[in-house]
Length: 182
Image (cartoon, rainbow, N blue to C red; front, side, top):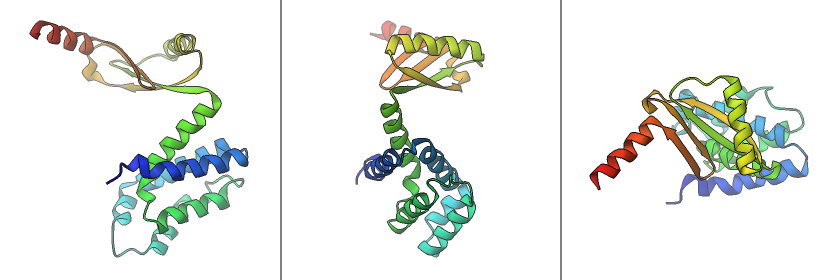
């Protein structure tokens, strides 16, 4: 069985190509975020897998929830895209489609996304300073997503693409434990 992201990639690439042609990258980003929010709801998740709910009913439900939240520039295409996902039983791939689309969009815009995981809350000034340092290091524009994980004990862990910078107390303790046991 293929990985979900492998199945999602052609859908994401098709949306990305359409968005580039129409110069609507941001609008499609919003449309996919709306669809992802609807599909991510536990009540909708239960209906997606229900064999007693027809594709038309599921389509009507999702369109009803999304309502007028779609930008007029992409509304018709976004509705058609959602219908294709429902008809092909691929609606549950929406988070993967959105992830691949956002990666393609960031690559086009020349930006990278950094995931900053901290043991304690980080101020906006600290995030800005960290982003500036990362932009210098990677020579690209960086957008940061901050998460709090108290299990890190202290410090910060930064993930940019496939690069990981682990400056956490937990990471140092794990490294010391490994060094002592080998």
